[in-house]
Length: 208
Image (cartoon, rainbow, N blue to C red; front, side, top):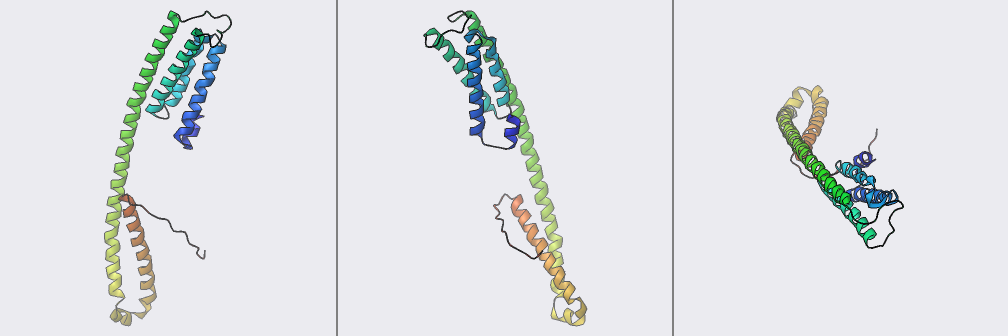
């Protein structure tokens, strides 16, 4: 579900909210299945693994939130704010400390590995974007030179002297000049795009 939501780019706020709701549901499940002594505490790791597809910050945030929720559950039982789950022993025991320690180590490992791979992926993406921009800029720049040469030749053929000598080419020269101007305009737009300049799209009606 998170992969699907990520592809539709609903916004980070929505994703963080969804993960927080998941943490609350798991916390409720922990309480109902034996309280702080429940093995369901490791289900928190599923949310943290889901956060790995979002960002490194999401992993740290969800990991810290899960730890706070679990410690809050322990504190609420200790203070008598909530009743211990049926069949569970009351109070903070050594197994809770072991769970917290193991959980923290696993979160650190997940966070480190995801940060390592995410940073490598971003670096590769940046290199690919740079290569694409450089290729686009060089290609478009090379296309502009022959298009400009064609314009110069058309200017020569559009002179009154050439039009007088070859009247039958007047319509063809005009059509080629119009098409060449469109090519030059497109080349300039691509150059602006390659240079990162803002472009505005204009919509207009035309006879199909």
